[in-house]
Length: 335
Image 1 (cartoon, rainbow, N blue to C red):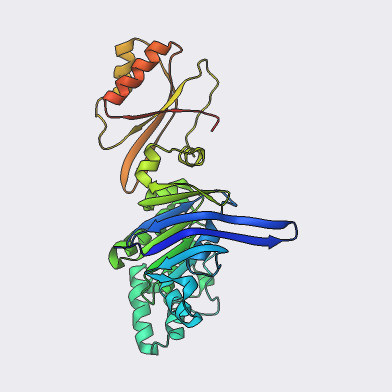
Image 2: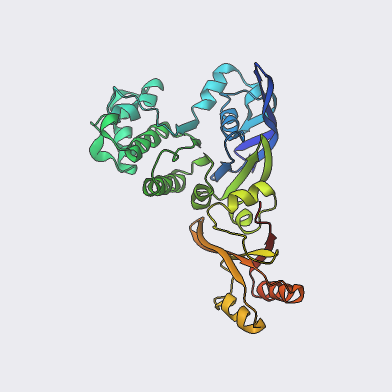
């Protein structure tokens, strides 16, 4: 079965007073139906431009975007408008209609689609119950918290049963607890309705919490793509490593130049592996940082260790850890 979203060799160039700006350069990504697919990169990486190319709010300078078998560059404007109704979008700042009540905000896209008023109200109430705001239907946006506003925006976005939901930095304006509740809601909607979700963010913790696959962008180019678990475990590019190591406290002020990152996953041994290793070799190591991440609902741990200066013992320690089913990679703390 072909992917629901196919991005093929997409480039986007903008003209500015200072010359051309290459926002995207030869990006190719496939997104399967039912995926929660993350696109991550720092500011200026091109992720927001790319998500706008998915619904052709930005037309690529080069390349092809295919949505559910339709090449958006080769269909009529009428067909494009129809296809866009299958691609909903939510934003960082909610974009609610401030003069409309909550239920009227959710009804708005149904009105545009020509749905009868009673049917639209019934559908809106059904969605408000799903997002946990059934008691707020007559409130106005100004009376809601940020998390509640985003829930209204999500209900409005899925009112017309879209196949795809694009989330452009949808949790960036929210506190951590509210962010978690919105991510849980998106996971529930993905499971309940089978909607393919594309998450645009600069926060790796958002990707790790909700996404099964990820594309990492850097300066308009695709740095790395794959399953979130695989990239967390063994990031290959410098950009992936920078994002994966976010939040890991590491201070390279001690003697010795050799550092490794180990990952504890489902296949890891349950023995106190670090303590046993120190006892086995009768040699201390420095723990530079440690963290536990939620990767797709499963806990995975990581540690950064500084190995002894003795190269023979260091190599034996690496072998010891790998024999206990740990992923071990050497790292540069300057990355």
